[in-house]
Length: 132
Image (cartoon, rainbow, N blue to C red; front, side, top):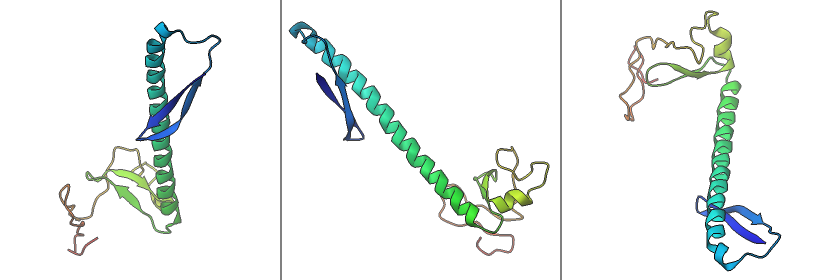
C-alpha cells in the first residue's frame, strides 16, 4: 500500500492511497512515485479549487441575504454604472422592459452623481453635492 499526501495551499488536504496486488519492484519505484506525485498534485488542486468555490458561494449567499433583508430598493453598480445585482424591492420596482435588471446591458442614471476615479477612496457625490 502506498499513501501520498494531498498538499494544497501549504497544508495537508487529505491523502491518496494506492493498493497493489504485487510488491513494487526497485526498477519501477521512481516512475511510480513520479506518477503518484503528479496525480496527488492534480487531486490537491481540485480540492483547493473546491474549497475556494465553496467560500465564494458562501460570500454570495451572505450578500444575497443582506440584500433580501433590506426593505428599500437597492442596486449594486460597477464603475461604469452597469447593474451587477439588485434587492428584491428593486426587482419589484424595475420596469417590465428589463431596464434596471441585472444581466441586461443597461446602465442606471446616477442623476447627476459623480463617481470617483478608480482606486480613489472618495465616495460618490450626488447632484446636490452631499456624499452618497
